[in-house]
Image (cartoon, rainbow, N blue to C red; front, side, top):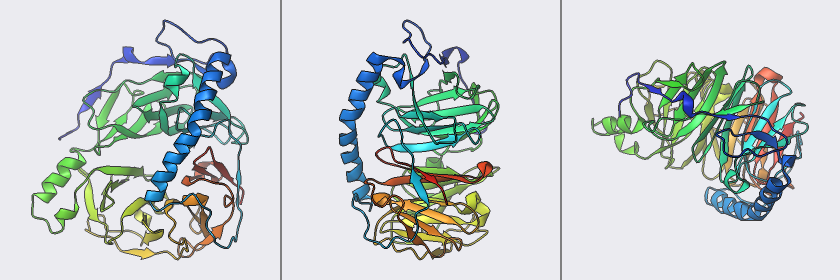
Length: 409
């Protein structure tokens, strides 16, 4: 499918306003109103009941998924060397997916079953948020996966497909309608400042808006499927590896993207200015679990986690046109437990998280890791670790069962 600089025009009249309201639910209106969980006793009771009765079932399902991916719900019998994170209490126990801060004090947290919380004290305390004209039964069907804030403007992305936008630090929200012609489903959204954002889709499309989501301009000329079909039919050596759909799209600090095949048998890279994605062989018989950037910069290298708890790191300045990258295996004793995410706090300090809430730290740039016991006695799995360079390198780790860890050093 060709994009060729197309612009998707969206109906302004279709946007729905989300206005803070501490008391009432709106009826007979298109407004969706933001409120705390305690704003309506009826809504709170039903929401609380659904959350409590659904947590055990959701946790069991997650346990099955993570076990199949090489994770486990049992603590790892490893020697604890550090304890550099502390848990932060939350008003719900749902799986957490993303966290973002508009400034050092004000931020948002999103997760499964409509989990949505706000902090105004740097993450010390969190207040659950809701939207008053969404029934509790409907609200818990949404899985909020991405949130992004910058300069007072923010975006939240959920499934079933739902995009929310605020221009006033989250005081009010509007629902952004998306064109039915959009290739694939939205997978990520990044706030770039007033009126500006960057969105990706499951088909490998990259779009930019400069008018708060009313129009989106394509940055890639063809979908990943079109690229793979063209390469596979061209007789390129190794093209048979390039099959499957795409997951785990991530962006570096300068706008380059990395995507992993859902089968874990190859990955792709894209940089601003390129017409299409470039596929790369994984170079190992093991399945790719996740990938990302060294220090958030594709020019400094890539990291790759494999099933069986393996972690590989590429050298600086990788050749993005090469079929395979040169990776070096890190010394991390996981005992076969899967690693789900990796993040560089600075050039030397690197963190990896995974199944059974295991955490590992390296102080030599990712060559050798030691075990950290911060979440060793907490059941569940960690899925995401993030550091905010712009806010004094504040660090957060997110996991199942409402687990939020704050970096304390």
